[in-house]
Length: 396
Image (cartoon, rainbow, N blue to C red; front, side):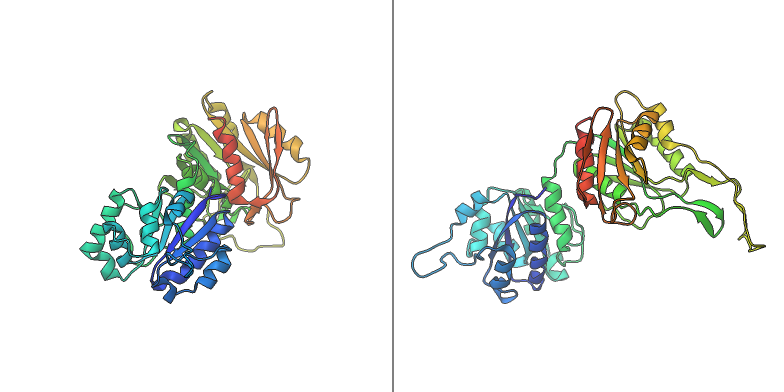
């Protein structure tokens, strides 16, 4: 949600100043326009030329840029920006901000700022833990500023972390989350994600290549937009750190089925993104099966159809979204699944689209409802998640 946003990035005299380059790159990648304001001490750690090359804007440091009377208006910057981010922010700058000591361009810009201000502290642990620093941060919070605590990744309210500046990606994510639409506030959404593993014996299973990336992207998008999310995840290596995502780890289809059936009645919506095994071995060996002969037969029996059962349970005030991964007759198969399982809309993707689906960071989907079909271009799964949740939010 940072596309088109105007961000003033304040940089102070910290060894972490080099990380501001990574912050700029991430902001620009997300479509933001960045204007750097740097303190004189900050220029001792990183050059304005480097910063200017990344932002495509002259870096502002002094009140007067030349000796001919040309000056930089901190008031104009305060009116121009959609947000101000000070990262890294030293203990000295924290103290000046908390007490209105306007002795450089960065502080005067801060005092003139009409937009939200985000602060990422960076200092020695002892300096960070000192009562004076903590008092200054509490005072700044009281003024309505957002402190991005070290090693938290969220807008924190207490003493957390080890004093170092938070990772650039998480700092930008905090801004992104702030500007994210809150159209799902108060909604409860259940999401299934990842594969299921169906045991053959203690060391072997039937599974698939699903990484869970799409389901986790959906969970984060819903959480960013204010929803309380119940994420039922098969065996994956993906992590989700959002506070409003409750994760339930399962392995088999039966376990995912039981968790979904238990939680669905309390939900406003369900997104069934998991790649669930349709069949499981009829018998699971208690010990590792040894190789005997040249062949081995495994008798398979059907797993519960989670989507079909939830579709029968679904109330009129609930929305249910399914996924269809197809290799042929894609639209016909997806439309059949939509009707059969009582879905409100279905997300279709195809293995014929190279570089999408399993294990990939990108996807290319079509969203099909009973009366419409919308095709999307190939894009990162986080962007695909935004398209899907836009469709969901319009129905809630």
